[in-house]
Amino acid sequence: MAVYYEEKQHEPQIETSVVQEASNEYPPSPSTSCVEVVLEQFEATGRSNKNHERKKSIHRRDWLFQLLQKHASTHSSSNRNDLLKHKALVVAPMVDQSDLPFRLLCRRYGANLCYTPMIHARMFVNNEQGYQRKFWNAQEGTPDEDRPLIVQFAGGDPSILVRAAKLVEHQCDAIDINCGCPQSIAKRGKYGAFLLEQEEQLVACVKALSEGVRCPITIKVRLLPSGVEDSIKLYLKLIDAGASMLCIHGRHRFQKGRLTGAADWNAIRQVVNACGDRVPIIANGSCASLDDLEECLRFTGADGAMLSEAVLEYPPVFFVGNSLGERPSCRTGPGRLQIAREYMELCNRYPPNRGGQGSGTKCVKMHLHRFLHADLQSSTELRDMACLAQTEEEMYEFLEKVHDYHQQIGHKVEHEELSWYFRYRNPDARCLESSILPDNSSNKLPTDTKFELADEGATFASCLFGTNDDDACY
Image (cartoon, rainbow, N blue to C red; front, side, top):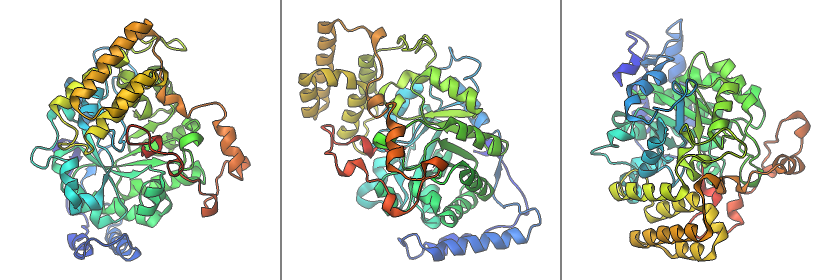
């Protein structure tokens, strides 16, 4: 990573013993005392330097652009237009779904930056039940064709995050802190979107990582429930603490499941205006097509766009030629069955349970469900076959059955449309949200726990593929 940063000499240094001492009795739960130790040390080093410069290698504003340029020859970009050719086209970190074969498939169709699935920092450091091996190949890292790659960790303890990051920093291009997951498990674990509301804890995590890790530190965030102004104030503090890039999901933590609603591109644009001169800003939310992606980039002025659910159903969404610009668009890219077959071929080369993802057959079935959702909605025979498939051979038989079904109904690729992506997206979403949450007139949401929305995953049975839609953690 030497290409992407400049060393600052003779700057005040945080003692490495601070991090080491805090972790000697590992595994502690995230505690105020640990946070205070880190913050006090940084305040002391800041006072000793009138310019408040950190000892950490300062990553230039253009580090992301330089990184993308370095790897440009490995990604499909021959048809990319002038707007997209200098932008980051990003595949989001998704639990049980950002596996290595899927990332390679997305890169084949235009993505130029990917994240790993969310990795639990404490479990990774402790290597609980072989957890580390499931998510990372310590000997080889990830293949060259899977770069650039950002590794995302979930956690709220500075020392544990540093220890986790040190295990992979030499084999990836950046380390990300998950501040986007809105699910109850994240609240219990004190990470994800709930960490945004623990400002001192989060700032301590960013400072510890920026001082203890050589590669850039990035943060995937949501908007605060209290509004965009408070969000920007927090984001500026995170940049001051050492964040080198922010990915802004234009929704707050209450917007999930059937309350997802539209992402707030105007809020993202305000963040770009307030913070974009200091670090790259990636926009995330409400992009279902190439047209949406281009519109989002033009409107927000962001350095790139991150896709999650749309790319899960149709990985070529980044690829120019996927749409004719019509609404509804006419698909000119590969069909969903071809995508499913290409994914299976990549799984043969890089089995998901051999490092890089961790859930094996479950992961493969989830992807087939996303790719072929429209077919599963219209054929009970296909649903039953997909449900019962457990082996690679049975999954290939399922794909052949889909092929036969397409021939039987006279299926045409150009008539394909997204299906799974729109399961929650409807014009009544915002009305439903307003009827449940008070104080909507001021565009601010309550933070009292009595107004906390229950995860739908607690009330709906897991789907036949071993998960439910609320398992996703974007």
